[in-house]
Image 1 (cartoon, rainbow, N blue to C red):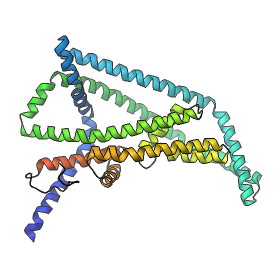
Image 2 (image 1 turned 90 degrees about the horizontal axis):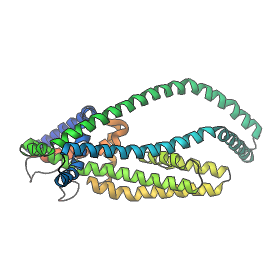
Image 3 (image 1 turned 90 degrees about the vertical axis):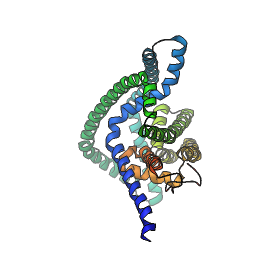
Image 4 (image 1 turned 180 degrees about the horizontal axis):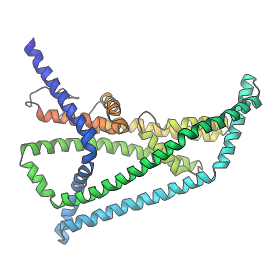
Amino acid sequence: MREELKRPLLNVAKILGIALAVYLFLKFLLPLAIPFLLAFLLAKWLYPLIAKLHSKIHVKRGLLAGVILLLLLGLLGWTFWGLGRNLFGQLQLLISNAPSYWEAAGDFCHSCCLQIEQWTGYRAEQIEYQVLHVVPELLENAKGNILPAVARGSADWLKGLGGLVGIGIVTGIATLLVLAEYPNIRSGMQRHVLGRSLLQIMRKVYHAGGGYVKAQLLIMVLVTVICVIGLFCTGNSYALIAGTGIGFCDALPFLGTGTIFIPWAVIKLFQGEYLLAAAYAVIYTIATLTRELMEPRLVGDKLGMPPLVVIIAVYVGLKLYGLWGFALGPISYILIREIWRELRPGPGAPDEFETEPGRD
């Protein structure tokens, strides 16, 4: 009996060791390695195009890589500039119309008080007085907490923006250097056992984890487009900024489009704008069905994981890594699985991570 238990316990110990190593790498080393991982990814995507152009026009690969990177950065900059300009314009419009929205909020409060009076018999004037007496106190109390938090958040945002610029510069330089030696780097890794194993693990993680991230981005973009188009059709002046924000909320775990659309529809229902309430309910339904129908097919197929395992990986990732755990959790599982498959004794050894019979 002891010999029968020895092998499974040893395998469990190995898996736990791999899991600890993966956690430590993703938690502490990944932030340092991000520019260089991005550089290798960009080199992998751009090298076939650069090699093809080099064979036709016989220009140095380094010069071609620099030109293509500049064009890519220019395209991304132009795209983000256009989106940012529209978002900033809608934000300015929202700020300029804030007094009218505050007045509309007062009218909505008055109508709610009248509705409560009909239901309870308690006078609407007294309810409204209590609300108007309490709200200023809450706002005054919130100022002491919100303003310092906003100041700290602004400083953190500027610091994060500077960090992103630094990562972009290092990534660009590293990409040029990797592209210049890309064939030599690959052939050098292929000549060594450790390098071949590392390439095999990276290839599988790239296809599975990259597919997961692309699937989530695709779903988020589709949901955002649905929300923007839906709000635009309702005549909303802030369709772009509101739809983008709702699409981002949908991408965050445990939030979704219902966080915005359900209260919004209820408010419009109380205000007697039944058509708008129905429109928001329809947009919410379409966006939710889009995610519910696409996520199992895209995410499950890309990861090679059952939906329950995906949920567990996302939950554990959120606990271990914070907000980024919705992506790092499944990627951690894939890394542990692939490293174990590379290190297991042989093809006949049992695979604790096998999710489907015969699946590799």
